[in-house]
Length: 301
Length: 231
Image (cartoon, rainbow over all chains, first blue to last red; front, side, top):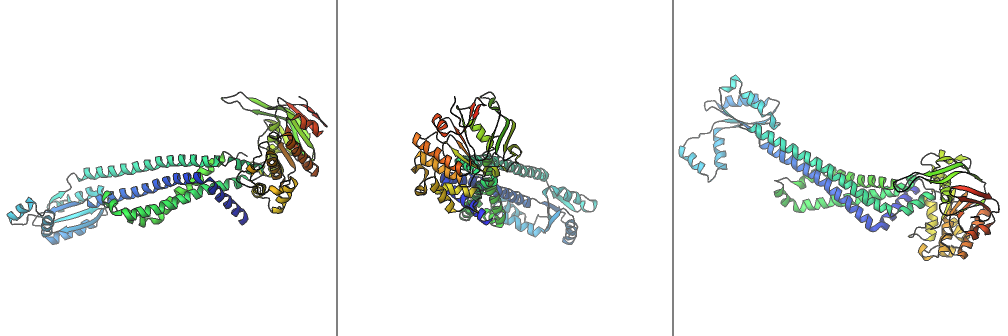
């Protein structure tokens, strides 16, 4: 058995070496497919990062009337925090609101106006983040209850629903487009790889014929070609893995600016095993499947 | 050993041609150890008979029996067992150009997974038998046509086949080399193998004085011992 396996691997390796240019061409085609798959994985990661980042920035601010005490607001905060939909509730005192305003409007004319009135016009508020942006309505409804309505000055959810819906819509469209692109490009990659391998196997058709005529089993004939395809895929996956690592390592800062702070290198490192698995699956899988179908033509019983 | 029972073979029509009948209801029996020559014009059905024996093709009707087994009943994926009992010799040699003569013959052993008993010594012995021992490290392109055909015979013999199927083995050779190849086939036949030779060479058929099956347009028109070329 071991002798047989050794024979098959030897035949595969000889075939790869002898095919030189076609081996290179096949590996390059599979490499392109692996790069494509990996890029799409990173793209999906980037999209998730961006939508999460935007979602993080969406909150509902509930302003209380100036006579509502801090203790009362903190009690309400406890009640709000009990809601299943709520992820985080923060109390912002008028003083903190004032400081935040000063920080963000340094050098603005607004600041001069604020200084001119000599009082703190800001109201105490609760800043509430829901688990899903679409759950903001639950918060609004909560404060419309009789017991709270009289204490609330304003709920800042102006057009939030519309923005959130549009955002969710865009995120889902980007995801669907990514998925479509993945499937479409994968199909092209399969066709191109299949044809390149077919060309490679066509050039070895005489050898296949000789093997059949001297009484080789179909599985024995097929095995070296499957291994050749898988090895081309393996080379492609390894090169792609290293190349992505190096590119992301050296150009991460440039990419960060381009990708709105998405740290692709950290994402790559955090998902190293997953990336490797995807690359091996695409590379080796594509090589194996394409070889299987390409060699089948020459293996009529 | 090999029996054809009312065998017909039709190649179905396609966009380029109409349905073609390669063999029409032919029957014959080849006994173990016989030397049989199939002769006839190109397209008479000689190669189709060889392909049916080796299970390269299936008959459209009738049955082909090899050692009393209907080849049509061989399970898918098991035809290799039948082919291990056959040795093929072709007009165009079908040697692998990137392997030496020794490697070409050894390769037949390796891929047929038959190397348990056979060794490198067997390869050298069989190359000696065909007169190529001195050239076993040469590549096919370094040999003459006759030498290439002898190498191809060595490859056919290496796994000790019961039947040798030779399809126009002298088609590319001059008369001297042709004579040598036929002598070699006779020697193999005497040693034990059944030989089925397909040819359209009058000189070879007449010189052999063996059984001749003459084909015309897919039918057997003559089948006689010590036959002569008749067309």
